[in-house]
Image (cartoon, rainbow, N blue to C red; front, side, top):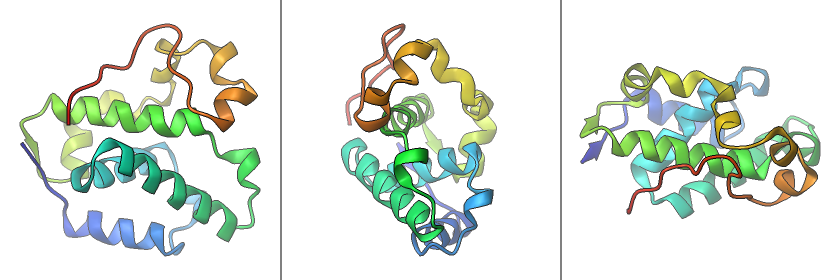
Length: 142
């Protein structure tokens, strides 16, 4: 299986990692795109670490208190979800191709089918990854 990156994906990653990407424009689709980019290059564990480090650095650079914005469970859960949908495809040419074939990933509320609001919006879930309490996120071997 091959998950490729376009030149635009590479430039997007560079802009985000160098904190040149505007935080105001870093929406849900940008999160999905960055997750795809990291997973195309790395395993789940390292992708989670990269995503965490990049988001924290981006928030700090923008002067935003990460403890108010960053959510550990959502970060890892979206990496797992993107990984799951990547594994349902034989290949992908880019993050845009991946998203075009998996438009449900753009629904930021999809995690509510896996997590109760009580768990997902808890301080515990904000600061440490919590497994879903409603429905597991499918996992595939790496």
